[in-house]
View 1: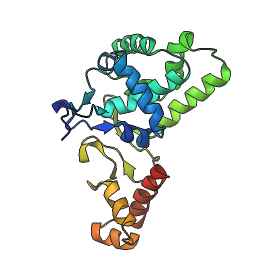
View 2: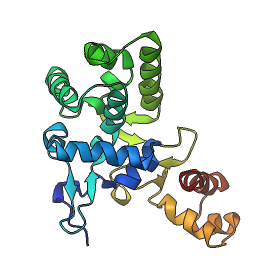
View 3: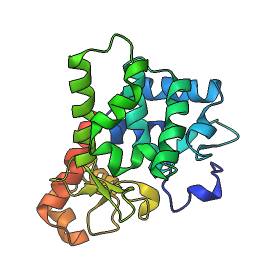
View 4: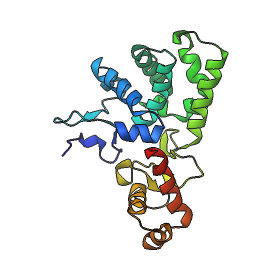
Length: 224
C-alpha cells in the first residue's frame, strides 16, 4: 500500500494520472516536469514540503493546493521560465501576499497579468501574443475555482462550472465527486462502463440525470 505523509490526508492526494486528468495536461508532460522537480531537489521547497511518495514504487503525489499551483507552474515552464526562477519568484510572491500557496490565490489567478508581470523578464522571446495566451489560460482556470474567505482555492471544477463534477479535498481524498454529494464520480462512470443504464444509476444513487451524465462525460473525455 502506498505510504503517504499524514498531512496529505484531508488535503487531497493526486498522482500523475490524477494531475493529468484534472488539469487537462498530457501525462508525459506532467511526469517530465515533476521528475525535474525531484531531480533538481526543488519539489519540497517549491511546494512547502507537500510532495509525498511511496517507498516501493516511487509514486509521486501532491496535495490540493499544489495541484492548483501546478497549472501556473507548468504554463510558466512552457514559456521558458526555469524551475529555479519559479521558486525564487514564488517565494517572494508568497511573502508579499502572506500565503504559502501564492499560485492558488485568487489575488493572482483572477488577474493573470500580475503573474505575467512578475515573470516577464524571465520569459524567453516574450511578445504580446504569449502574454495574451498566458493571461487567458490563467483567467479561464481561475473561473473554475471556488475561493474561500482567505482568497485561497477551496474547490475546483475540472470540467467547468456548468458540470456537477467537483474536486473538493474534504471529500473522497480530493477525488472528483458530484457536487452536493460525497459520491465518487468515477464510481458512476465505472457502473456505466459495466453496462448499467444511466437512468438506473440515477435511481440507485438518488441523482439527477444531469449529475449522472456529467460524471460519465468527464471520464469519457479523460479516457478518450
